[in-house]
Amino acid sequence: MTRPYKRRNYFIKKGFQARFIARFVAVSFIGGILAVASFNFLAYEEIDAHLFSMRIPAVNPWNILIKEAAYANGLTFALIVFVYFLTTKGVHAKIARSLHRIRADIHRLIRGDLGTRIRLREDEEFQELADDLNLMAGELQRRFSDIKEQFERIDEAMRELRGRPEGDEKILREKILPQIAAVEQRLSEFKR
Image 1 (cartoon, rainbow, N blue to C red):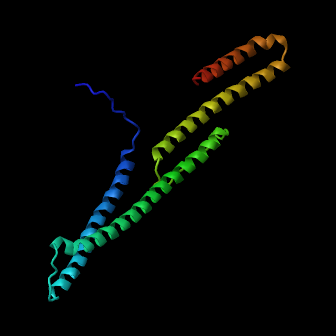
Image 2 (image 1 turned 90 degrees about the vertical axis):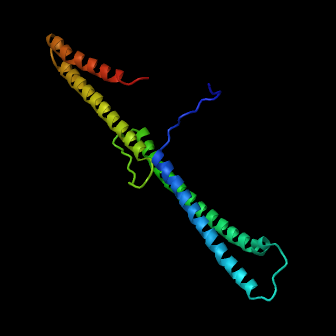
């Protein structure tokens, strides 16, 4: 059977996703324990109060503890929402801090400072992206320094050519033409 839709695979960092989910599962688990514990505490207090009174209320037993269940779950819900808010804020700050550093270093690369490297702390996200960008910057720096070196050789040969008699042009052309070919080959490595 063919499906009318196709599942798309996106770039997903499984480690980041697992840590993100684990935080929420842990908070939910602790919230469940707190809900049960607070309900038990409140329910025992209410049951004790009814046991020592001389009258048993003429209501459904569920209605006796409904108020305690609502208090316990409401309190736990508020606490879980607060902890989720703090967790989400922490994850957002961690991601935003990493992205801000990466963005600032990319702007330095754009301005032509190919010696710039992206440095993130070990506990920050996007380490692999930073490593890839550093590899790219290093390779660009190497290629551009090779091209610069070739141009310096051409410039040196051209300066020699100016001071020599015309018979030496052939020898100097033999020095310059291979350098120009090397520069053209280096420039052809860049795809446009």
